[in-house]
Image (cartoon, one colour):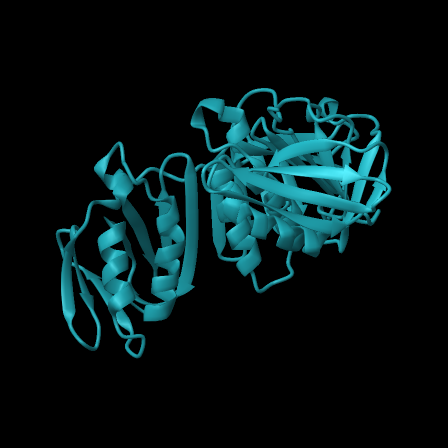
Length: 381
């Protein structure tokens, strides 16, 4: 194998696929990236795969001899990233098929690789469900929900995002047991590829973050293909592909968690609320992240306070449109900020019934179909 390519393009491709390389590989070859050069198409393909998440991309190259080899991802990435972008990079594999010489204008490096035959094949979906998706709609759905998924691997299903397709619409949902984000996106699919019952799949958040990154970086408006079959999902876009296993099991019926009605509402300016919460969070973060909302309907003001024991206390006052009796309710300030920053409207409404029952943040605009449920923190008097 012998190939000449751009340093900047090779560096970008390595940074992309390296995110799918195992940090603690169960087999030495999984710490490597697979490089495949094709003289017929004059392209160099790079693949990273940790048996759960796979990322593949390709770039234009001058391929003198076709071939394939796997090289240590970290070492190769660090060398290539430090080479001059003014000079092309040449990769040449010796006759043994395990030694690579990497040459640039400034110098030459030798690196020992492993046979491409030892590298596992990326899962390919040949049947099952096929969808064409609008990339910007998929990015919108993921941005609005990924943050609410759980980081606790023991919770398995909750470490992912539940995607449900109904005709052309997509509903994305994520919960960690303390908060729930649900976003409905219209015209996410290009064709009516699903029946009336819909199609649903739960995918790991780690994989979907890479999908979001890929979709956001696309320079084309062309639809992205999604293939799903037998526990595997493939997202295919232009010269890039992300594969992921699915999370097996029945996702919680999150619709049952959202109360049918509310007795109290707080209507506030979203940006003003974010700014006030970020200021009061300086104190809240010193103790337990808890901020308390106190309403007085006759004043038209919400007071947001934090009391960090042995450190200090403070409050912020915000004008609000209040309905219902006066009350006090407390939340984890980080959960509130995550939800508010995922919303796009100028004004939001906090809906609640009691200090111990779920509260819901929604946009004041009917066009934004985003629901964010947060469990209050019990106030100890």
